[in-house]
Image (cartoon, rainbow over all chains, first blue to last red; front, side, top):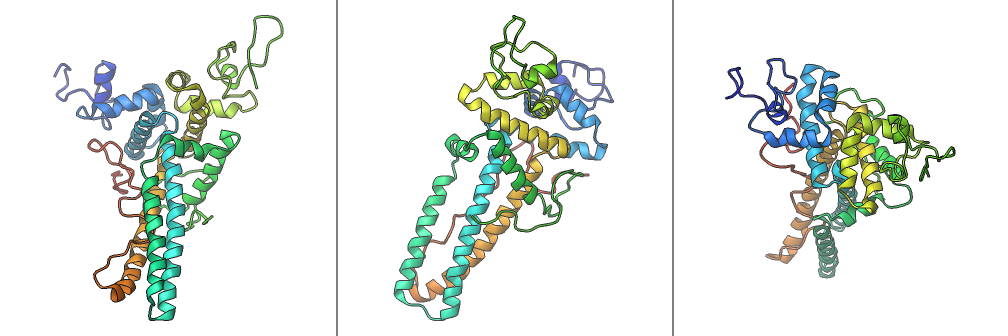
Length: 198
Length: 157
């Protein structure tokens, strides 16, 4: 390789066309075989912002931070309007649908369990309902920007963001073993049901 | 809403971005429609995480009618990153994905129970289940160079 060090320059230094020094802050997290990762992060956040962010963290937190930044950058490049927030919106929607479906399925199940035997016309009702729901959800899945715009619709977009933030505070309650740094302002009361069924 | 400002002695108040950047808020200012002066934190956050020039480039690459949503989603992400510098809003995604998977499993189990009842009577008939199938919520970013959300314990601390 061109540099005087024995290892090749990291993806960041390669991108920035500079010498990759031993103390390079990017090197541990942007290996040279993943050039796109740094390119994306650079495009969305900028190298100096990333440096500042990393310098404010403990070394053991930096890998997770870089990976989450890379994910955010990737999402933002795929969806320049909504980025990760589109994903959040979609997941919240899916969660609500699942809760409704689960509630419906449990209700159906309880009917069978309570009645014991079933009658033929009962089947027809259950199956049609399930079929409709199944078909509807498949239509949802390839999310278009139209879907996402609707999630933000309704007056000031910032209100929608606040609404999402509220839902997020509720959702962040249960972390389930996924390591997370101290996060001021998030609800950490371990609530298990983040979204109320509508 | 701050609109055009002229070089005359009276001008409209600068938008939050131009106030922050200490520059003149011109009539074509790309930030002005989305960063009103009464919300200084919004721009301060976005500037800290993304930087003014990155935001400006991003806004220039999307249609004008999309810019408000874009700015609001950037503001949301910036705020989330400031509250949680390690995971930002991706932490919430991870939690949501986990919850979606959990609920999907519960739904699958309930559907399996339902099918047991219906199959008992219907024989070979395989009715549709309530809800939708597998692969829900696993938002797999570009596969290959990293995986996020698929492996919750991915980071080695």
